Amino acid sequence: MSERGRCPGLPARCRARERDGMAAADCGREVVGGAVVDYGSSDIPAVTAVAGAGFFILVIYLSIAFPPSGSLILLAIALTLSAMELYGVIRRTGIEITRDAITLRRPILPAVVIPKDAIVKAEVRENKLPGPSWLLVALVGVILVSAVAGIYGGLSNPASMRFILGIAAVVFFPVMTCCTSVRARYPRSLTITTADKKIAAIYTDDPERIARMLEVS
Image 1 (cartoon, rainbow, N blue to C red):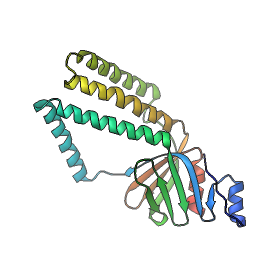
Image 2: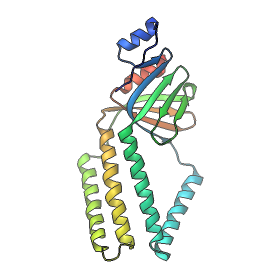
Image 3: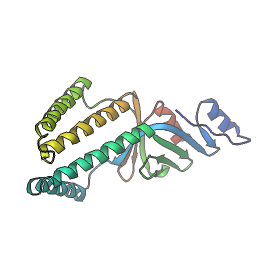
Image 4: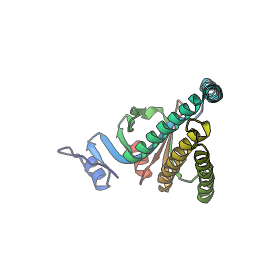
């Protein structure tokens, strides 16, 4: 899905792109809307990994020593991540490509500007789930059954870890499954790798079009 703008007196190159169905907000800028984009680092620095492990240990300690503090923190994290992921899939990401850069305008999160000279590789790949769809559905089903059992068993004590984590699982895993299924609807995706080891995975109806824009814009 794309948004098309016009500039008066378009040169032949811009008019040709419009006939091809490309979006031209002006003569030097291409705009594509309606994409789902994942952006992050291709590796996890050691400091970040240690900090994450330390935070997890702290949450477990709080859950045991000062219930329900740790469980409530995990619930807040699960609800926040679920809301951000669902909102991002619903609102989608706008992509702008100029002569020098590609800009990812994500909902909620700050825009990401990737200079073209920082792109190491832009590759269109087959979009495949990490495993058979039936296996993923079965795993989520088992988790939900366990979570519902935890909620039922903790009704007498809503402050218990069992009840709170059950609520978190009932929200988090269905949302993640829904967002994964949205991505799986696209047969191909465009993966952009940058020199600073960042990766942008772009899910859209025509990733080849964006790849061409990166080459010719």
